[in-house]
Image (cartoon, rainbow, N blue to C red):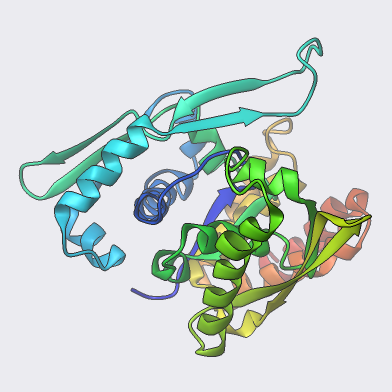
Length: 318
């Protein structure tokens, strides 16, 4: 399988849940299929309020997961239906904008005749996978599936989220809550040994072998004698992840929709549609537009639309 980027909303990256390694692998494959079947459609937003049925060839799932035992995949699908995904936006219950819900990762899984696996994703969790915002996490599907530890998988996603910032700082209690470990590893030494050091060792070794695009180092922030916070430094080599034309198309299109606020200004959709048609006919222009979008991140957001409209008219549509 070629190196491929998968995108997921940052709220999935930081949500409270715990999945086994194989459950996460199945979820990676489902997310990949959702993106191919739903997100990459220009009008995919139309189904955002309905449950989504995803169908995949069982042979492809087994191949992508490097799995030889179909029963393990079935067991993972069963677990994903029973597993809880909990979201809380952090506002007090008496706040009018407070939002909380709990839902299973999938509604059902079915191994059909003919060698197909069908999965239904709830409308409650679907927006977290497909929301077209700039706040998504990029991570390599190849790396994510290859990781052996579920803690490596979660910390890999977190490091991917903060890659461009060079790292992040987080309270241990918050990290344990995200990993659904409030009742486990009460002593920090156990948490460090069983979670942090396991993930650090696997990611670093894989990175040094050229099989991963990043790893992390971490330091402890103490208050008195107890460790309360951790500071993660993300070490990455962006050259190891090459964006495919499909990935470039996705990034450029979603960022243009965001910059030109097509949700509130539907007239801009036609302008973006013409732009994307031209960019798809010339991959070099698509790469050029991606670089332009990366360059404007240091500019005031109010200037993004005016600058990109000038670039598009001059370099792509003229």
